[in-house]
Image (cartoon, rainbow, N blue to C red; front, side, top):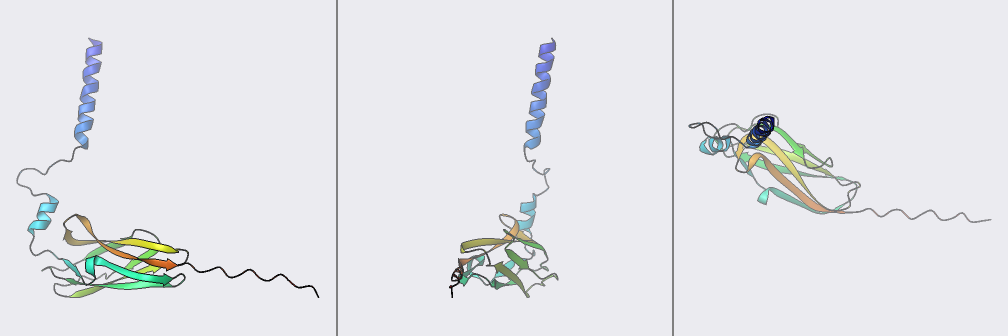
Length: 163
């Protein structure tokens, strides 16, 4: 009897644990967050000028900070509010407008890439969190890429000559 009781308890705990890991659907009649975002025709929306939301720096010399300004327009019908912007690495720094971008108005996001110590090809992402719904997640993603030509080390000093 004890073995049966212990076995049933273990199975019950395992079933509860497995059920807790499943994502729950919203209650009937309540749309999911993604459905609610897609259903709002007035929601703010980004429209960036750069093709594929990507800027290619081409070939850069190591040392100076590379900078690009991504220009965008709010093509939605409500103000666009950017809550945060972050980068995929510490060598990339985004700067974004803190005030709402009204419908039909434009904004600028400056992205800086530190080339010092980063020789070779690079691809970095900037993640934008805003009130604009995104079809595949909760953030909009910009991309920068290019190649940094590493600085050549200076030649070693000549040995002193004997006089």
